[in-house]
Amino acid sequence: MSRLSESPILIQIGWALVLSLAAHLLLWFGPQIHISFRPLQPEPLQARLINLPQKPVKIATSKPKPHPKRAASRQRAAPAPLPADAEMRAANQSVESPPPPQPDAAPPEKLSAEKTATAADDTQQNGQGQEKPEQPFPLPERAEIQFNLYKGGNGLKVGEVVHTWQIRGDHYSLTSITEATGIFSLIKSGRLVQTSQGRLTKNGLEPDAFWIERGQSADSTESALFDRKSKMLTFGSPQNSRTVPLPGNTQDLLSFVYQIAIDPPQSGTVHLFITNGRKLDTYDYTVMGEETLNIPLGQVRALHLSKVHGQNEDGTDIWLDADQHYLPVKIRLTDRSGDIAAEQSASAIHIK
Image (cartoon, rainbow, N blue to C red; front, side, top):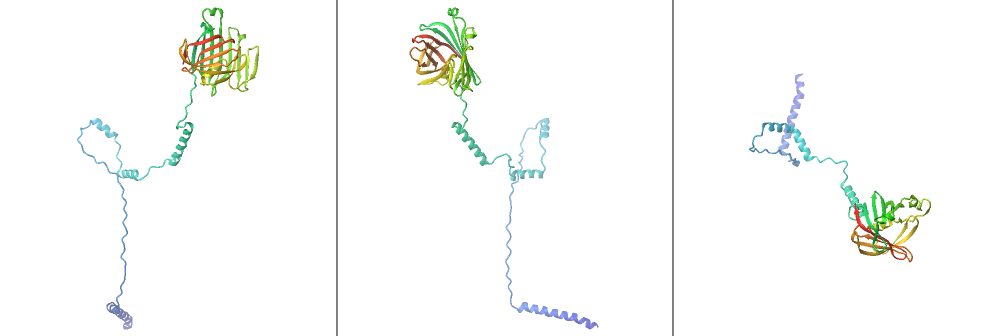
């Protein structure tokens, strides 16, 4: 039994020796086999440089020793140093991280467009990129003109006249007070008061009311009321009044002179509707040009305007000071025969 069980093992060993001998013979005496191979290429290395903040180098210098108390205060005020890792993170964040976007900031294109539009609007307003300022009113805020009143052409002074002009907001007030002086005050007592009140508009003066008071009697008072909404004018005395249509550029006996002073014409004729509290009529004033006056105020360069009138009609001439807001400095009334009936010549002007 032992020989039979050992025979398969011997057979396997024999075959193994035969195969090993055959393999050696094939390597030594068989055909040569060439195996081609490609060497592996090494992958390129990638590197990224990061600029690390450099710590300042402390240079030792010889300094005087500080006072102990001051040194202690400086040490207490100095901030505590950051840990190494926190300092590195802060440095990297400041170097590599971009600043956070502003939520309310508009893009550059939008900002430039808005600036261009704003500049275009400003340029369209005044042609220079700035808003046009409001023009001041031609007449001063307050003025007082004192006149000498003469009767006839012989220069006989019989009284004084004072014009008071005042602006309050968009309203004006204008008053003329005439009083006799000297011996004539014994003959003619009382005062002649004319008052005009109204608004300042882009077209100049728009009177709302005008009235005249003579002496001390209220019955002699005459007035004119301007109703701009209904475009009606009521004038007369309390006992006798009438209402007529109101033209747009109607002035009263006192305001028309200052209306001309707002925009003084240099030539031609000025056409006006004027009421004196008793009636409404049309008047034309022709520009006579500039003249030099010698009046109690002094030598004045004045613009002369004369009312157009026919024969047997009263005339009026006014002179406006070209160097003092074109305020009236001389007013002359002529009678139907052409003689001087009365004349006002300025003796003083106070502008506030």
